[in-house]
Image (cartoon, rainbow, N blue to C red; front, side, top):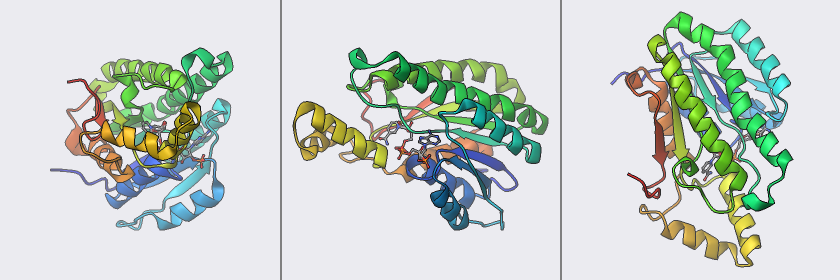
Length: 261
Ligand SMILES: NC(=O)c1ccc[n+]([C@@H]2O[C@H](COP(=O)([O-])OP(=O)(O)OC[C@H]3O[C@@H](n4cnc5c(N)ncnc54)[C@H](OP(=O)(O)O)[C@@H]3O)[C@@H](O)[C@H]2O)c1
Protein backbone atom coordinates (compact mmCIF):
# COMPACT_ATOMS: atom_id res chain seq x y z
CA UNK A 1 0.00 0.00 0.00
CA UNK A 2 1.42 3.40 -1.02
CA UNK A 3 1.08 5.66 1.99
CA UNK A 4 4.25 7.75 1.78
CA UNK A 5 3.77 11.52 1.72
CA UNK A 6 7.32 12.36 0.67
CA UNK A 7 7.50 15.74 -1.13
CA UNK A 8 3.88 16.57 -0.27
CA UNK A 9 2.88 19.83 1.40
CA UNK A 10 0.03 19.71 3.91
CA UNK A 11 -1.83 22.67 5.41
CA UNK A 12 -3.13 21.51 8.77
CA UNK A 13 -5.60 23.90 10.42
CA UNK A 14 -6.32 24.03 14.15
CA UNK A 15 -3.10 22.16 14.85
CA UNK A 16 -1.93 23.34 18.29
CA UNK A 17 -3.81 20.61 20.18
CA UNK A 18 -6.29 17.76 19.92
CA UNK A 19 -7.21 16.24 16.57
CA UNK A 20 -5.40 18.81 14.38
CA UNK A 21 -2.13 18.35 16.26
CA UNK A 22 -2.42 14.55 16.06
CA UNK A 23 -2.97 14.80 12.29
CA UNK A 24 0.06 17.08 11.84
CA UNK A 25 2.24 14.56 13.72
CA UNK A 26 0.98 11.67 11.60
CA UNK A 27 1.41 13.45 8.24
CA UNK A 28 4.87 14.74 9.19
CA UNK A 29 5.89 11.19 10.18
CA UNK A 30 4.82 10.01 6.70
CA UNK A 31 7.16 12.55 5.10
CA UNK A 32 4.92 15.57 4.43
CA UNK A 33 5.97 19.16 5.03
CA UNK A 34 3.36 20.50 7.48
CA UNK A 35 2.17 24.10 7.38
CA UNK A 36 0.35 24.74 10.64
CA UNK A 37 -2.42 27.30 11.15
CA UNK A 38 -3.85 28.34 14.54
CA UNK A 39 -3.85 31.26 17.01
CA UNK A 40 -1.54 30.21 19.83
CA UNK A 41 1.92 31.32 18.70
CA UNK A 42 4.00 29.85 21.56
CA UNK A 43 2.36 26.46 20.97
CA UNK A 44 2.85 26.69 17.20
CA UNK A 45 6.53 27.57 17.64
CA UNK A 46 7.11 24.58 19.88
CA UNK A 47 5.14 22.13 17.73
CA UNK A 48 6.89 23.11 14.51
CA UNK A 49 10.19 22.19 16.20
CA UNK A 50 8.88 18.90 17.57
CA UNK A 51 7.11 17.41 14.53
CA UNK A 52 8.82 14.37 12.98
CA UNK A 53 11.24 15.11 10.10
CA UNK A 54 12.05 11.79 8.38
CA UNK A 55 12.98 13.76 5.21
CA UNK A 56 14.58 16.69 7.07
CA UNK A 57 11.44 18.64 6.10
CA UNK A 58 11.14 22.27 7.14
CA UNK A 59 7.73 22.57 8.77
CA UNK A 60 6.29 26.06 9.21
CA UNK A 61 3.44 27.85 10.90
CA UNK A 62 1.23 30.87 10.30
CA UNK A 63 -0.88 32.67 12.86
CA UNK A 64 -4.53 32.64 11.81
CA UNK A 65 -7.74 33.37 13.64
CA UNK A 66 -10.58 31.64 11.83
CA UNK A 67 -12.99 34.23 13.18
CA UNK A 68 -11.36 36.59 10.65
CA UNK A 69 -12.01 35.25 7.15
CA UNK A 70 -10.10 38.11 5.48
CA UNK A 71 -7.00 37.24 7.49
CA UNK A 72 -7.36 33.55 6.58
CA UNK A 73 -7.59 34.51 2.90
CA UNK A 74 -4.44 36.66 3.09
CA UNK A 75 -2.50 33.88 4.80
CA UNK A 76 -3.49 31.06 2.47
CA UNK A 77 -2.71 33.25 -0.56
CA UNK A 78 0.76 33.83 0.86
CA UNK A 79 1.20 30.09 1.44
CA UNK A 80 0.15 29.08 -2.09
CA UNK A 81 2.44 31.75 -3.55
CA UNK A 82 5.36 29.95 -1.88
CA UNK A 83 4.27 26.29 -2.04
CA UNK A 84 2.00 23.95 -3.94
CA UNK A 85 -0.30 22.48 -1.34
CA UNK A 86 -1.26 18.82 -1.90
CA UNK A 87 -3.21 18.18 1.31
CA UNK A 88 -5.62 20.47 3.14
CA UNK A 89 -6.95 19.54 6.57
CA UNK A 90 -9.94 21.77 7.32
CA UNK A 91 -10.22 21.84 11.09
CA UNK A 92 -10.91 24.46 13.77
CA UNK A 93 -12.51 24.83 17.19
CA UNK A 94 -16.10 23.62 17.53
CA UNK A 95 -19.00 26.07 17.93
CA UNK A 96 -20.26 27.01 21.41
CA UNK A 97 -22.45 24.32 22.99
CA UNK A 98 -26.10 24.89 23.89
CA UNK A 99 -29.68 24.09 22.83
CA UNK A 100 -30.69 25.38 19.42
CA UNK A 101 -33.60 27.30 20.94
CA UNK A 102 -31.12 29.47 22.82
CA UNK A 103 -28.69 30.03 19.93
CA UNK A 104 -28.33 33.62 18.72
CA UNK A 105 -28.17 34.82 15.11
CA UNK A 106 -24.62 35.89 15.79
CA UNK A 107 -23.62 32.38 16.94
CA UNK A 108 -25.02 30.87 13.74
CA UNK A 109 -23.25 33.49 11.60
CA UNK A 110 -19.93 33.08 13.40
CA UNK A 111 -19.98 29.29 13.12
CA UNK A 112 -20.93 29.48 9.43
CA UNK A 113 -17.99 31.82 8.76
CA UNK A 114 -15.54 29.88 10.89
CA UNK A 115 -16.38 26.50 9.46
CA UNK A 116 -17.97 26.70 6.01
CA UNK A 117 -16.68 30.03 4.64
CA UNK A 118 -13.11 29.44 5.81
CA UNK A 119 -13.11 25.90 4.38
CA UNK A 120 -14.20 27.38 1.08
CA UNK A 121 -11.60 30.18 1.13
CA UNK A 122 -8.81 27.71 1.91
CA UNK A 123 -10.03 25.24 -0.70
CA UNK A 124 -10.36 27.80 -3.50
CA UNK A 125 -6.78 28.91 -2.85
CA UNK A 126 -5.22 25.43 -2.93
CA UNK A 127 -7.24 23.79 -5.72
CA UNK A 128 -5.42 25.42 -8.71
CA UNK A 129 -2.08 24.00 -7.48
CA UNK A 130 -3.66 20.61 -6.78
CA UNK A 131 -5.05 20.52 -10.33
CA UNK A 132 -1.63 21.38 -11.74
CA UNK A 133 0.00 18.58 -9.72
CA UNK A 134 -2.78 16.08 -10.45
CA UNK A 135 -2.95 15.35 -6.72
CA UNK A 136 -5.18 16.78 -4.04
CA UNK A 137 -6.61 15.61 -0.74
CA UNK A 138 -9.12 17.82 1.08
CA UNK A 139 -10.12 16.39 4.44
CA UNK A 140 -12.71 18.05 6.62
CA UNK A 141 -12.95 17.30 10.33
CA UNK A 142 -16.66 17.52 11.06
CA UNK A 143 -18.68 15.42 13.54
CA UNK A 144 -20.94 12.37 13.77
CA UNK A 145 -23.76 14.90 14.18
CA UNK A 146 -23.87 14.88 10.37
CA UNK A 147 -25.60 11.49 10.78
CA UNK A 148 -27.45 11.92 14.08
CA UNK A 149 -27.68 15.37 15.75
CA UNK A 150 -26.14 15.52 19.23
CA UNK A 151 -27.98 16.99 22.23
CA UNK A 152 -26.94 20.46 23.38
CA UNK A 153 -24.99 21.19 20.18
CA UNK A 154 -27.64 23.11 18.22
CA UNK A 155 -25.40 25.45 16.24
CA UNK A 156 -22.79 22.76 15.65
CA UNK A 157 -25.36 20.23 14.34
CA UNK A 158 -26.66 22.82 11.88
CA UNK A 159 -23.33 24.02 10.56
CA UNK A 160 -21.82 20.53 10.28
CA UNK A 161 -24.61 19.50 7.93
CA UNK A 162 -23.84 22.50 5.72
CA UNK A 163 -20.15 21.59 5.63
CA UNK A 164 -20.96 17.97 4.70
CA UNK A 165 -23.21 19.11 1.83
CA UNK A 166 -20.55 21.60 0.65
CA UNK A 167 -17.91 18.84 0.71
CA UNK A 168 -20.03 16.34 -1.22
CA UNK A 169 -20.78 18.91 -3.91
CA UNK A 170 -17.10 19.79 -4.16
CA UNK A 171 -16.09 16.13 -4.44
CA UNK A 172 -18.35 15.77 -7.48
CA UNK A 173 -16.65 18.72 -9.16
CA UNK A 174 -13.02 17.88 -8.29
CA UNK A 175 -12.92 14.07 -8.62
CA UNK A 176 -11.85 14.25 -12.27
CA UNK A 177 -8.60 16.01 -11.27
CA UNK A 178 -7.47 13.29 -8.80
CA UNK A 179 -8.54 15.62 -6.01
CA UNK A 180 -10.60 13.90 -3.35
CA UNK A 181 -12.79 15.58 -0.74
CA UNK A 182 -13.72 13.51 2.29
CA UNK A 183 -15.03 14.10 5.80
CA UNK A 184 -13.99 12.52 9.06
CA UNK A 185 -16.70 12.37 11.71
CA UNK A 186 -14.94 12.00 15.05
CA UNK A 187 -16.84 10.44 17.90
CA UNK A 188 -16.11 11.33 21.53
CA UNK A 189 -12.37 11.96 21.31
CA UNK A 190 -10.39 12.78 24.42
CA UNK A 191 -9.34 16.39 23.78
CA UNK A 192 -9.90 19.75 25.47
CA UNK A 193 -13.02 20.22 23.34
CA UNK A 194 -14.53 17.01 24.77
CA UNK A 195 -13.61 18.03 28.33
CA UNK A 196 -15.33 21.41 27.89
CA UNK A 197 -18.45 19.75 26.43
CA UNK A 198 -18.62 17.39 29.40
CA UNK A 199 -18.38 20.37 31.74
CA UNK A 200 -21.05 22.31 29.85
CA UNK A 201 -23.44 19.32 29.92
CA UNK A 202 -22.78 18.71 33.62
CA UNK A 203 -23.54 22.36 34.45
CA UNK A 204 -26.66 22.40 32.29
CA UNK A 205 -28.07 19.25 33.91
CA UNK A 206 -26.80 19.95 37.43
CA UNK A 207 -24.92 16.65 37.70
CA UNK A 208 -21.25 15.80 38.11
CA UNK A 209 -18.82 15.53 35.21
CA UNK A 210 -18.33 11.85 36.13
CA UNK A 211 -22.04 11.13 35.55
CA UNK A 212 -21.91 12.72 32.08
CA UNK A 213 -18.67 10.94 31.23
CA UNK A 214 -20.08 7.55 32.27
CA UNK A 215 -23.23 8.08 30.16
CA UNK A 216 -21.08 8.97 27.16
CA UNK A 217 -18.72 6.01 27.54
CA UNK A 218 -21.69 3.66 28.03
CA UNK A 219 -23.02 4.75 24.61
CA UNK A 220 -19.83 3.65 22.82
CA UNK A 221 -19.51 -0.01 21.78
CA UNK A 222 -15.72 0.27 22.18
CA UNK A 223 -16.34 1.18 25.84
CA UNK A 224 -13.98 4.18 25.89
CA UNK A 225 -13.31 7.59 24.41
CA UNK A 226 -11.21 7.78 21.26
CA UNK A 227 -7.66 9.05 21.16
CA UNK A 228 -6.82 11.88 18.75
CA UNK A 229 -4.20 9.61 17.14
CA UNK A 230 -7.02 7.26 16.09
CA UNK A 231 -8.67 10.08 14.13
CA UNK A 232 -5.28 11.06 12.71
CA UNK A 233 -4.66 7.54 11.39
CA UNK A 234 -7.78 7.77 9.21
CA UNK A 235 -6.83 11.27 8.02
CA UNK A 236 -3.37 9.99 7.12
CA UNK A 237 -4.83 7.20 4.99
CA UNK A 238 -7.21 9.61 3.24
CA UNK A 239 -4.28 11.97 2.55
CA UNK A 240 -2.19 9.21 0.98
CA UNK A 241 -1.99 7.95 -2.62
CA UNK A 242 -3.55 4.69 -1.38
CA UNK A 243 -6.91 6.45 -0.89
CA UNK A 244 -7.15 7.63 -4.51
CA UNK A 245 -10.57 6.01 -5.11
CA UNK A 246 -12.18 7.18 -1.86
CA UNK A 247 -14.07 10.37 -2.66
CA UNK A 248 -17.10 12.20 -1.30
CA UNK A 249 -17.54 10.08 1.83
CA UNK A 250 -18.05 10.83 5.52
CA UNK A 251 -16.30 8.33 7.76
CA UNK A 252 -17.35 8.07 11.42
CA UNK A 253 -14.35 7.29 13.66
CA UNK A 254 -16.31 6.81 16.83
CA UNK A 255 -15.73 3.38 18.34
CA UNK A 256 -19.04 2.30 16.78
CA UNK A 257 -21.25 4.84 18.59
CA UNK A 258 -23.23 6.27 15.68
CA UNK A 259 -26.40 4.22 15.27
CA UNK A 260 -26.62 4.26 11.49
CA UNK A 261 -25.51 1.65 8.96
N1 LIG B 1 -13.10 15.97 20.46
C1 LIG B 1 -14.26 15.45 20.12
O1 LIG B 1 -14.85 14.61 20.81
C2 LIG B 1 -14.93 15.88 18.83
C3 LIG B 1 -16.02 15.15 18.36
C4 LIG B 1 -16.64 15.55 17.18
C5 LIG B 1 -16.18 16.64 16.49
N2 LIG B 1 -15.11 17.33 16.97
C6 LIG B 1 -14.69 18.50 16.21
O2 LIG B 1 -13.40 18.32 15.68
C7 LIG B 1 -12.72 19.59 15.64
C8 LIG B 1 -11.41 19.49 16.44
O3 LIG B 1 -11.74 19.06 17.74
P1 LIG B 1 -10.69 18.97 18.93
O4 LIG B 1 -11.34 18.11 19.93
O5 LIG B 1 -9.34 18.66 18.43
O6 LIG B 1 -10.75 20.50 19.46
P2 LIG B 1 -9.76 21.31 20.40
O7 LIG B 1 -8.99 20.42 21.28
O8 LIG B 1 -10.61 22.38 20.97
O9 LIG B 1 -8.72 21.97 19.34
C9 LIG B 1 -9.15 22.94 18.44
C10 LIG B 1 -7.99 23.44 17.59
O10 LIG B 1 -8.51 24.45 16.73
C11 LIG B 1 -7.79 25.66 16.93
N3 LIG B 1 -8.74 26.77 16.89
C12 LIG B 1 -9.82 26.98 17.69
N4 LIG B 1 -10.41 28.13 17.39
C13 LIG B 1 -9.68 28.68 16.38
C14 LIG B 1 -9.78 29.89 15.64
N5 LIG B 1 -10.74 30.80 15.89
N6 LIG B 1 -8.86 30.13 14.69
C15 LIG B 1 -7.88 29.24 14.42
N7 LIG B 1 -7.74 28.09 15.09
C16 LIG B 1 -8.62 27.81 16.05
C17 LIG B 1 -7.12 25.56 18.29
O11 LIG B 1 -5.87 26.23 18.27
P3 LIG B 1 -5.60 27.72 18.83
O12 LIG B 1 -6.31 27.84 20.13
O13 LIG B 1 -4.11 27.77 18.92
O14 LIG B 1 -6.13 28.65 17.78
C18 LIG B 1 -6.88 24.06 18.40
O15 LIG B 1 -5.62 23.73 17.85
C19 LIG B 1 -13.71 20.62 16.23
O16 LIG B 1 -14.45 21.22 15.21
C20 LIG B 1 -14.60 19.75 17.09
O17 LIG B 1 -15.85 20.32 17.36
C21 LIG B 1 -14.47 16.98 18.10
